[in-house]
Image (tube, rainbow, N blue to C red; front, side, top):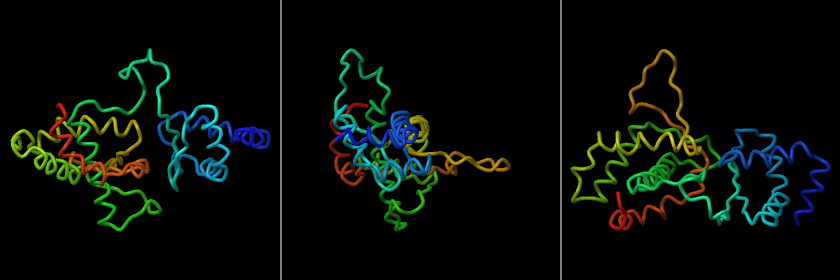
Length: 215
């Protein structure tokens, strides 16, 4: 039970406190953030899992590169959805674009024979744009004129990329100082949180959401 974390706290107080703080300071804790603390969490995963489950009712999720705590319910009902600090797209096209990103991510992994154990996938913004624009046209064949590449780039993808960076789904790779990259040539790194979503399963719901959702 959670008392085991208390015993661990007696022996490794600084590391226990550091791990707890890191897990609450951002949506995801990556092994690359602090390898020593990540491996400490991995080694004592059961103690931390019991602690969060007993005292908060939260679930600790973890794989080889990423850890997060997941809460099912928001207890302070006086705080509306708009005021909560959480990843939450509300516009239909933004939600669809995120699902298409997950779909693109899984396709790229398959094409490159990559798993979570490999280095993080990197991709060109232009390649993501091509996939997302094509999928919007497939989802809205009767409105294909509303989704030309320029519109998808300017009105959908470019506005959501900073949010995806903020919540640590992707990371933009800074080009060398002597190189000016066009938007489509910008390189992004897909961060390990994307493995926590099933893009293939979500992709099956794209046509349904396109019909029922509101832009």
